Image (tube, rainbow, N blue to C red):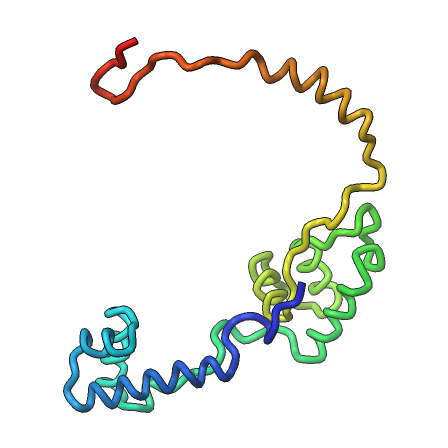
Length: 181
């Protein structure tokens, strides 16, 4: 599944939040307290306090948006596009023929082979999210699935492993007193 706008905040959402911070800065300049700003903009007191400290240290410029968060991508724009194309080809095209599943470790290995860049598994997860990719669950059952064998296993092996059902019995109701039975 692809996320709209590659996940995270859009430029419009960042601009909207920046305007709220600027309005809070004007209230701080007029002498408003952190609590008054927090109540007025319906934000946490911690956020209002953070804005106030930033305003005191750097004025209105300190309340400006610093752009999208996160570390700078190790791959260039064309490399990200090439990675997306490689992922679309599937794992078998890159040497993983045993199944058709991309794992984060496989993608990290692919990035290292294609671009000579080292990524951790967590870094690959973050990169894929920024690219608009998400994990997928299988949409259907395996073609090799044997329903008769599954039914036989449920009837024999599973019931043996479960054991008999226990009815309610008096036990401990609290740590200090025994239940009366």
